Length: 386
Figure (cartoon, one colour):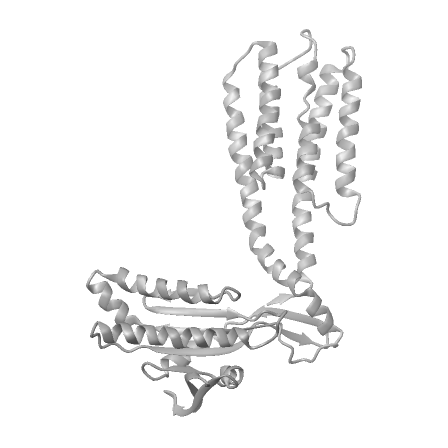
């Protein structure tokens, strides 16, 4: 389950991860600036350049760590850091300066690794950083007229930097999805915690339909003509959705011959239109399959099950004054149960779906026993009311 406060905690965890990387890069920067000060400070004009470099880097670090929250422009900050860190003063040193080309190459590689780790979450920024460091390197290469085997170490650092940024991206991508759900419903959560809404308030509802046509599927599959069935269903979906452009139907292929169809409630409307839409879909799909089997003299049966309920729900804890928001799969399980305990060529619904459809559709009450001998109540969806 997701705590409503986890969105802030997620942002903090992400900020701390990047801050630790900036700390490591700061140590790298101090190492380079110390080396440049020792080897270049005796030459005219170099002390001023070293001072400017320190000021630039100090500005970036102050901006990163001064506030209570981590700045959002992480890629821009990574570029600023790289511009400060990668501005290696050996490029501007006189020919008489103490210069070690191998050391310069490895230093450039380390800077490139840190740059890609901080900006590699975006491909465009990564390319800019690679080009920037390589330009600095080529200028130095041209100036000193050397080409050493250490040049290839740059590509090793590029690969490691991109890999490191990918690991960071993968680590936070899952949390980002959960965080987006919480962010979307945070207004509702705040109202619930203030108890301004009733406890039975549902954050989002949905109606789902489960269809089992395994017999028909296996028949066409065995005769190597499965495209016939796929074209039939595809044509039906297309025509039905064309006539109802305002509502989106989600199709889930559960397995061979098993399908879920889901329509989610639009919170802005808060009416029964999503359930009515799926009921019309189920009736027309049943008629299409029944007509197809009759025309092709195929003796196959199929069942459908419908259920309605909360897709995103919550639990309120008055003791700790917290709201736990979670995604419920019950609507899927009960729809599948309605299908498995249903009647051939019929659409069986739960009582929750019956309440949404009874004003516009004819539904017949059905009492029956499940496998454990418990009496259950269901409704058979016959058609629309005239």
